[in-house]
Length: 265
Image 1 (cartoon, rainbow, N blue to C red):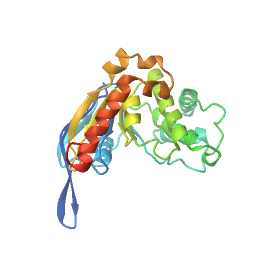
Image 2: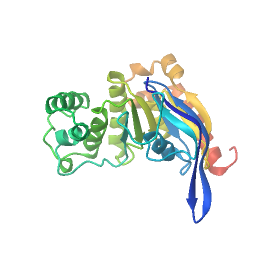
Image 3: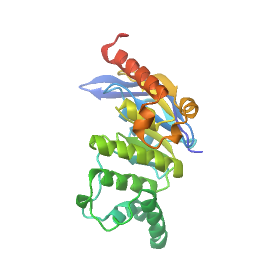
Image 4: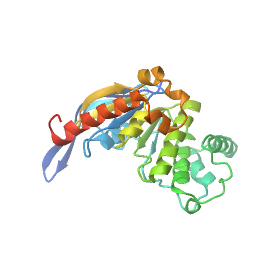
C-alpha cells in the first residue's frame, strides 16, 4: 500500500526573527492508487505540502507518512515532477530517463528493459536518441514524467507539472496523464492552480484555505464521474460539457473566491 497521509501537520517558517505559519493542522489522506488534486489561493501552502511529502522539508508539528513509513527525507519510494522539466540538456531522452536507475545501481540490462517499457508507455518511441532542445515543451514534460515512472515509485508527487506549457499542449498532456493512469496507476498528489485540470484529473479534489493553509473541503469526483460515465469520453472538451463537471468546477471556484476576498460572494 502506498497511501500518503498528513496527520495534523503544521509548518512554520522564520522570517526576520518572526515565526510565520504556512500550514495549520493539515489532515489529508491520498489512498493507494488514488489521485488527489490540491487547489487553493496562491501562497496557501500547496507546494509546502508536496515538499513535506517528498521529504525536502520537515513538519514543525505532526507527521507525514508514505506507505505507512514516516517521511524523514527524500527516498526512492517517491518521485517528484516539477513545473520546470529539469532535463539534462547534454543527455538524450533515453539517458535522461535512465539517470535515476543508474544512480540506484540498476544493471544495464534491467535499465534498458525498464526504460524501453516506459518510453512505450509515454509514447516516446522514435525519440530515444533526441536531446531536450530538439523536443517540444510537451515532449520534454513526457520525458520528465517518464523519468519519474521508470523508478517505479510508490507515490508520484506532481507540482504544477503542466504549468509551463501552452494551453493546447497542456490539454493534450492532461488527456495523456489520464491514459497513463489507467494503464499504470500510481498514488498521486497533484498540485495545481487550474480548477478544470483538478476536476478532470483527480479522484478527489482538496480545497485549501488561504494562509495559514488548512483543508477547507474535499470533493469526491469519482461518484459523479461514474454516474455520468466520464471514462466513456476520451477528450477533455467532452467531459467539460457534462453537467456534473460544470457543477463541480463552479462549486470549487466559489469556494476559492471566498478565500481570495475573505467573504462569501
